[in-house]
Image (cartoon, rainbow, N blue to C red):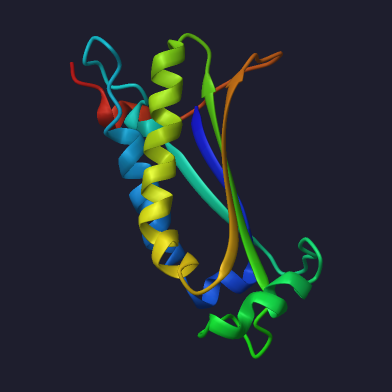
Length: 152
């Protein structure tokens, strides 16, 4: 398990290459190394999932965006106050150091910002990245993926 689950306002689909963003986030996770140089996230267990919310209500409904919109162009629609959001939750199993957890969150944030920063230059978007460490009450795995990446 490392899972990066993203929930985002559906209006971002018009301005982001979400499949590329997912791949880049997964690659950032796979590149993570701990203090000893070991890969932090197993290749076969790394998952990045993105879910658009087709219906959403954000902040004040766009009032502040419309008030500030005079200098903004190229917004989502004719409404310069329309907002967007992307919430990313990285869930990892226990056992990694606090420093590794912090670096993992920073790496995911950097990967997402590569895509979002250019869009945020002309749009009002909120981005949140959270890292959770799971304490499982049940943890079963059944996979034909992991054997592909074992180095015997």
